[in-house]
Amino acid sequence: MKKIFLSILLAIMFAFSAYAQDPELHDSVQQSKYDFNQFGRETLGFTIQPTKWNGGDWLTFGLVSASTFLMIKTADEPIRNGILKNQQYYNSIPIKIGNMWGDWYPTVVIGGAFALHGLLDDNPLSNKIAFEIAQSGLYTEFVTQLVKHSSGRARPYNELGSSAFKPFSFLGWDFTSFPAGHTTWAFSLSTVLSRNTKHAWLKVLVYLPAALTFIARIYQDHHWTSDNFIGAALGYFIANWVVDQHEKPIETGSKKSQIEIRGLNIQPFVLGDSYGLGLTLHF
Image (cartoon, rainbow, N blue to C red; front, side):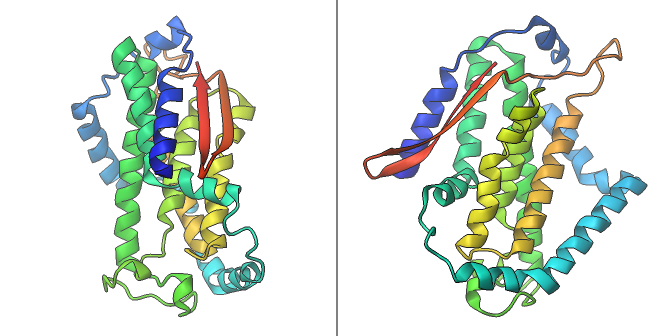
């Protein structure tokens, strides 16, 4: 009931948000159709992308991998032991908001609201955001599930230690800790929203619920810190790759397609025994 209530609220708020048209930005995204053909072409490009990595890409991959390895060996268990000593915020509003933002339905509801507005108003700006939210979410989920079931890492509550891995064992959800799925979804969604605004304060603000997701998954003992670190990295880099595909220079070569979010409100709410996170975007 709480999830349904949140979804309906978000859908209403997004579907009826005040949109201001910007002709220049409108023209800059006309070249993309945001359809299944485009999705297919870009999916192929995403699949073969590692074969095109340059030195900087491999350096980034190495640094993220090395940082994750160090966390597994030195930080995961001390952080978990410290957090388990103080569980008074287990059911607090920030923790609940973090868990909700990292679930699948905020991505579906927010992306769906943009798609609906794009369809009803023939607005390519909304179509772009909806397409990127869906595309990034699907790519992120595919990579996350592939790594999860390949690595077979035990979740912390199993009390098997941070180095317990049973690759390709398919032993159920208790061995799908790495990477953190909620965190990949959260950072994928927040990164797409952040990339589609020019305002620095909005770029930072839209990451707030994703940060709460990162914290919540560790605090409630669903994941190790390294699970969330690599999950955040996956969501961030995949979403950036997706947005980059649609922001290549337009005909003049001097501008890039860019949707500008001019305002964003994030408000937690409590209504009876229901709670949630309300968001409104203004263009």
